[in-house]
Every structure is written in structure tokens, then in C-alpha cells.
Image (cartoon, rainbow, N blue to C red):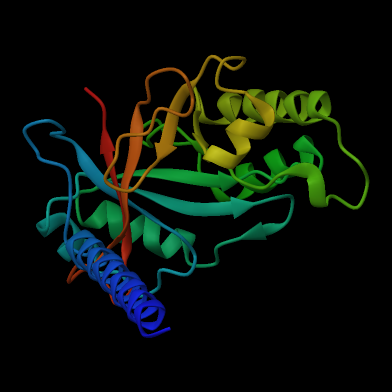
Length: 233
């Protein structure tokens, strides 16, 4: 009986040690990611993506810490838009940053209405970076069933309409879940923007153009962590 209790205690101590090591590793990862960005030698062009929740960003400070460009959330779905987009756009331009606009695509809503929302909010400006379409939400939660073919059809319509407005091809910011569900990277011939903290993503099956390399970079440019993005040469 004593031997059995000794073995049980040893197992518990071992399990506790493994747990402490795992917690220490997770803590180290979290702390190291706070200030990590990919090396400039490999990725000379770097910048940030800002959402409507990233209020109070100092764009001059963002430029100072090494951002060459910034993508700003402009619209989402058929009706939503960031009320601070215009002010942020002007402030970023004033800080000598290149600027791009992001639309968050909603597979539950008609492409024409989403395109109209984007066109109303984002100026036609040849100096803007290619428009980016964030593909995160799945159609599984739509109140009316939407097939995979319908998602691709509506997305294609949306792409065509905003590209006509922008005068340049769009870039697709595809999440891993969206790509796993719809496999659009191989079907739509557009540059890709992929997401993967610290590890270069390969889930789209072909090379990416933009990479969100750190989704929680802590900087002096704002109170909230930034999504840091690099460009593939």
C-alpha cells in the first residue's frame, strides 16, 4: 500500500512539473510575441492593420516604429462601417504612410449591397493600396441556407464591383477556417493575405503576398496591441 501511494505521489509530482513547464512555455511565448516582428532583412516592407476597435492610434508614432503602410477597416457587410475611417485615413496619409482599406465580407448578405457600402465609404484614389477583403465569417450561421457555390458566386460579384471602383485587383485576406471550408485560394486568382503568429502560413496551398505575422504587437503607437503585417518580396 505504501509503495502504491509513493508511485501515485511521484506521478502527481511529474504531472505538476509538466504543467509548470507548459505554463512557463506559454508565458514565454506570450511575452516574446509582445514585441516580435519578422526581420527587415527578409521582409523590408512592413506595416499594420487597424480595426474599428483600435482607437487612439498615433500614426506618426506608427511610422516612427517602422510601419511603411497601414490597412484600415472601412466597411463590413452591407451596412456597417467604421465611423473613424475618414479621420484615420487622413491621419495616416499625414504621417506619410501608404493606406489601404479593408472590407469584412459577410456571406449572408448580397454582394451588390456590400459593394455599395464599400464604395460609399472608400474614395476612388489611385494612390490607395489594393482593397483587401477579409474572409472570416462562414455561411453556417446565416438565417437562410447559403451554399458553397453561392458564397463563391457572391464573393466573385463583390470582387468585380470593388475592383471596378478601385481600379486595381483586390487582395484576399483569408482565414484558415474560411479556406478550410470553401477552398477559394485555388479558385480565385488574387493575391493572398494569410494569418499566422510567428510561423509563416501555408494553409492556402500557394504563396502569400501579405502575412499577419503578429496579431498582438505591443507598441507605443497606441494603447491596444496591433496586427503587424509584412509583404512577401
